[in-house]
Amino acid sequence: MQILTHEKAAVLLAAAALFASSGAQAEVMSADEIRRDIIGRTIYLAAPIKGEFPLNYHKSGVVDGDGAALGLGKIIKPSDSGKWSIEGDKLCQQFKTWYNGEKMCFVLTRLSAGSVKWVRSNGETGIARIGD
Image: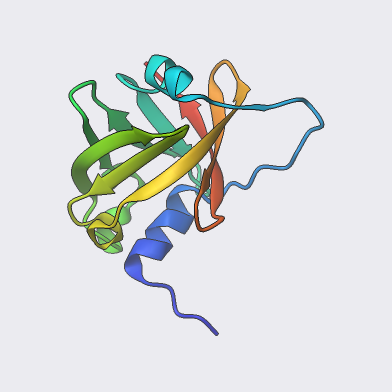
């Protein structure tokens, strides 16, 4: 039996909705598409307990999030900030305290004009809505 760390529990809480392939052709987003469609917007990770976890990708290179509305304050620090980068066709982020400050990169696959599937390099996956 594996014990979940606070960070892993938060990730599972914030993004447990797994993608089931619908047969439609989904396309991995390129670096240019990430810059155009993600940067400068808020991305809402689907949460299994009804709700969404917002991450703000500011044009300045800062990423921040706040899970207080989902009750994450009981598990981890509810809000954090850090920096984002694009490496190849992957969106990377590194927070100050979340995930022990480790950089993580994601492949984003467009599901529709307003949603993406994300896959982290460790294989974890989820769905996110692209906001304003």
